[in-house]
Amino acid sequence: MFYLDGQYGCALQAACYLENTEIVKLLLEHKADPNAQGGYFGSALQAACLKGNADLAKLLLKHKADPNTQVAGYGNVLQAACFKENINIVKLLLEHKADPDAQGGYCGCALQAACIKGNTDLVKLLLEHKADPNIQGGGYGCALQAACLKENINIVNLLLEHKADPNTQGGEYGCALQAACYRNNTDVVKLLLEYRADPNVQVLGRDTPLRIAQQLGNAKIIQALLDYGAKS
Image 1: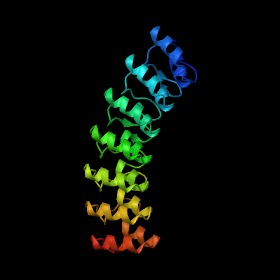
Image 2: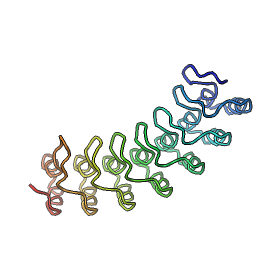
Image 3: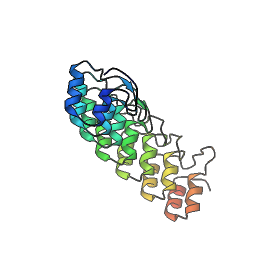
């Protein structure tokens, strides 16, 4: 049961993937290590989280599975649970002191994963647990850019209310304002400008927000940018 090899790394991870609670219990009773790493899912706990099995996750945590272990794929189990949008498992992990600001993985952090999925309830929950809205990393650079790209104005507003920096640069679209302009979303652009997003932001190798709006022919966005001082 301790042998780390094969597709699932160890017997415990395989049992979690198959969602066989009785075998998981049996292995844990015989001292299987709940923190063994390796295999397709990285750990038994991440396998349980990705399968959306809250009972198995609870059982593993009861046997001292570490919710903050860095694993392959999503980087950590909290990010995995957020990407799968399982709010019960996310709550469980946070109750067991999972770090909402742990970085790494496909999405950069749990908050960005929740924003990518457009899940307002998860975003609220993470922010209630003091998730930092300004963590940088992941494909979209930060949570705010991800929310703008997904055109979820409720999440964008929520992040800005929690002091997300509208001028953070990085990620696929350069910054939040450029993402909103690329998406042709007038309401999100106006909201970002109200929170002092720089209408003249220059990101290496990318057009300015005004140039993007001009290319897309959105007169309302063009006017909003000009009203806030964009230079033509």
